[in-house]
Length: 358
Image 1 (cartoon, one colour):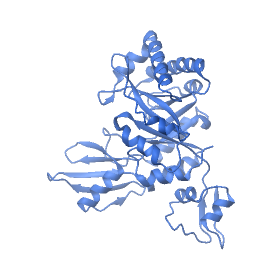
Image 2 (tube, rainbow, N blue to C red):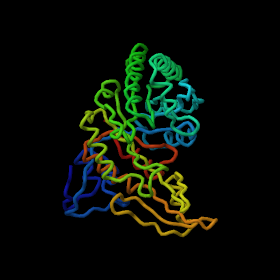
Image 3 (cartoon, rainbow, N blue to C red):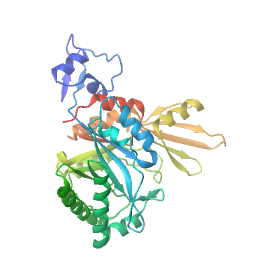
Image 4 (cartoon, rainbow, N blue to C red):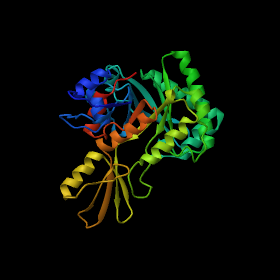
């Protein structure tokens, strides 16, 4: 939806006309305080969103702090603390009691189940936990027990580095988990991550959508193993979402957005870096920050204390706003942030204050 500014308009008046929030309109149009607008200016009027956050147990203190300090509560938070091991067993990490403070803010907390072990996503864990029916049934029981005993509101299945056979088995696991949850309460939520490379694996999204309440499409294109460049290109994100919409009703689809950076060293090493840390490095080294025209991502080059050259690409409020405009044009109303504790403060504040959940 678009609106052309008229004489006498202010951003607040425009927001009132559309029963929106002026901060949400400011975010969608990359406006900064004092939010000046002028006659003839065309404003994009975004619609209502449902905001979800991810917390990883290896950084739970920072993630929980973000969820609690956000000016407005998240709709849901996925707290990943259940990990399938290489032998197929479920290893529950220690659940931070502060998670219940998040629930006290009227935020539903889902127990995140991953095949993250030994610091990386292991296909061996997916093999052991998913492919054999007996092992899968045992895993389903342990997952439901852990979530229900932890006084949480549902379960999120997040398996990475998997193939189509694992995906089909994951759908069977989801169906089993959902049936077990229904025996306890009708109010539990079950969701699943759709890996960013799902098209390469020919994953059946249509059937999975029948097994879960919500599918979170991973919108993080690049990792530490990929060539140098912006973390997520808009063309890639659009193609991935449009492909998913051919199989899943948009009412069941959320897009996971990462706001992070990657630091490529000349020697070939690549490291993740938070966007705030990237901005600090640029400031401390006196590097000039440039902006990529296609992705809107920021980038700069610097020389470390050992004399090695680096190139850093990172995302911030500008790239985040561009992604939101793109997703809005595709009718996606559910946005998940990866991950709380690493999202820039400006993004967290703008997102949590700007969105109303429908």
